[in-house]
Length: 148
Ligand code: FES
Image (cartoon, rainbow, N blue to C red; front, side, top):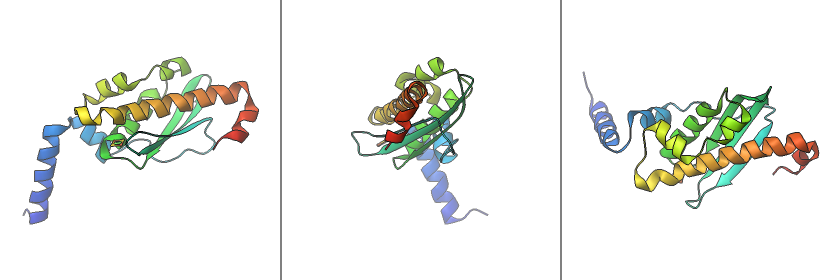
């Protein structure tokens, strides 16, 4: 038996399906790697021009990203981008992870509407800043004390 709520939910999902790819909807509704990881070796928090913030934390072991997590107070699209970005860097070496940019996140998500492209840029900028933080702290461990 379908209820009015089920019908409304189906209608919303159908409308979202006309705007976003299945992959975007999946990552927005079931985000991977959301939250934090204790003892992260790389950390960044960035606020985009839209006013939304994304944090990325990562752990590197033997020059490979062993774990990554994101958090955002942004839109559903930013959740999908943070989820995809962290999935894409896990298991990659640091240079490969640093090469994950906005276009690669967009490609992995199957694209985004024009007015959401900046959400992928926020994720890639936060990701690259977290990797640069890891590299800076690795080179100069005292820099960890100056993290915000
Ligand atoms: Fe701000 Fe998507 S609208 S990150």
